[in-house]
Length: 99
Image (spheres, rainbow, N blue to C red):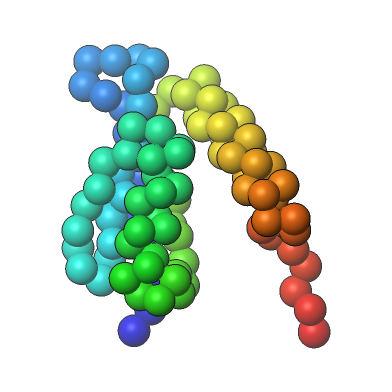
């Protein structure tokens, strides 16, 4: 059975600026609410550890009410976090497949 997480960017109630990520484990149906990408990264790691670190897929989405400027902020934060992780690991997170 595949380990799939569903990540949805959502807006805090009555806000046009405050966002969070709802992280759903599709196998256990558990849901985590992450207030930022650092918390999200930690939760993905914790949930992934339950499956031996083997995550087959992370599906991304957003609620319809998430404004474009918030998506830009999230994308920027994601690329920043990716760079930090790559520096820490000493290799790219996303690389070309070796055949």
